[in-house]
Length: 498
Image (tube, rainbow, N blue to C red; front, side, top):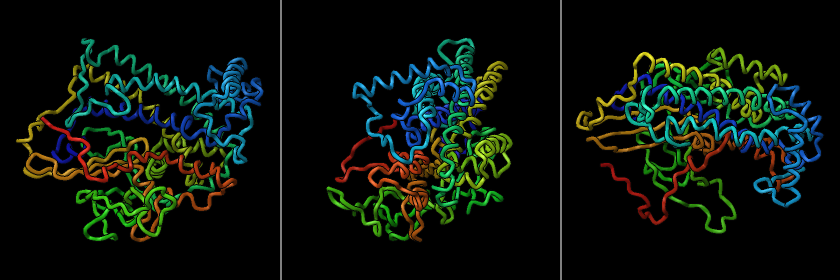
């Protein structure tokens, strides 16, 4: 949406801005919490060890770090009994393939039981709070109400078929529920678990360069710089300088990727001129090895001014911290103090994991604010949700181009579009996992994943738990980073616009 709005000079109404902020914001809160408990947590938590825990000691531990209501001995005993029944029945399910008992696990049994209990709670919690997406966007995670020029979610305080006073009240309840769980469960668990793994502040540093497009506009202009989470570039781990972002400095290499440019393997292209022509030169089945001196990845190599860049929650929180964001500085300071580490610990696997929790808290606190602003607009009679003044292609210039910055939960996302004669002539996107998973470029610079894994200790090579900790700390999404094509160039999908 933002790319086309930028190309056509469209300013969206304030209500559309608020709804977009809410859709993105609740997705951050849900997505980050799910990542911590369900995608990354078991890299640190030994499920089977929880069977040895004393529920009374678990209760005492939980009550020492939070006043969350589910913290009694009886509660934790019930969770432990449920886990025992899974094990006794030979039905560990999604836990079956874990490296339980691995020497890299350090949590005592009581901390493991507490984390398992909150893992299960988070499953129920997230399905309730994400209903805000159903109200504002019709579905999760791919909201259906986005339109060029605004949103398709109608506002009317007196109409049951639209977003009304009742909808606002339900969303406020969801926002409060989301914020309470983050404050009383997620962040305390994060700090408790991190305290046993402080050596991981020395692993997983990555490339040391960070890119954040910024998110949650405070005004209605496409690609605005007036953002709740600021935009910026940090180079060489230097928090003393935040550089502005210039999309013209973004290029993509295919030197080690299974694509080709007619200009050659060492060329790079800004996405406005980008092409995605595949040329697979990798191994044939059974795929025994990759020759990493040649092409070895389906992911392109984006670079900013020829620097590899890390994107994601750590990049956003570092840019915000270095830019003087008051609340981010406050929460980062609290986390560093509780863990008794300095700011240098942020450049690590542990710092990346902590930054996600910090961001979740900061964004969760804003959800009630944005809902209140939306309610305030409705109360004073402002129900505008869409600007359709440039909806008709005949009103567009003969040629136009635009780009749209966005911060997805996993990091910096931008789309570039060129429009000619009312039709899309070229469209390219660079997504978060493309930045982070990028292979080496023409200058042989590694991408963030590759660089972050250097120096990682691995106790048992065929159980690489330590490798998973660092890779999972980025929250990879390879389905986003790579768009699959049919090797025989058959048409897989046709979209007709009427």
